[in-house]
Length: 253
Image (cartoon, rainbow, N blue to C red; front, side, top):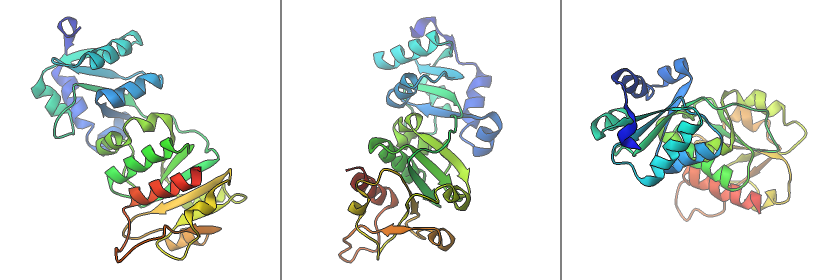
């Protein structure tokens, strides 16, 4: 397939490279996803990329993904290692890259994870991945959170972001007002109920704060319950992504 592909034009290469910047993503309403796993999930989700770039030595899996995107009407281009490295945000570029329009944001469902000030891209992506794995419907990103379209977040979701409804740049105080009649749960470092207390509750919103600051006091005033992961043994706190995975697992049982 690669032999018959048009080469990725320099202007497109430069446009893709600029999408590593938040301001450019917001202007173009486009973002980058890389690798056969992530791109394959976007293919299964029915996404039509703005452009697909396939490295000259791409695997058969990546070639097939690119071919299917081409049948869907996306422009597919070939590229060498050097240009692929220029476009990629990763230390080691993948053999397929897609440029994707911003995902649709929908009304919130019944099991919602809200992130308050979780600024680390790896943590945000991993929490989205965990939420998808444990059957949650939505992830809401409040003030101070890493952007879901940051390339590091996209990689960390491992494709889960196209299976979730993700609301970004939200004011959590306002979003929580829509959950007045269901449990509003905060994950706290100490003093809360066991995460297993969420089992069997069909609808709730859970707020997870940053490892450094926790959930903001103004949000805590709106909580109807708190949960705490038992343990510690002298350790100050758990990583936000690990804590989230434990809580979401217990809540899903």
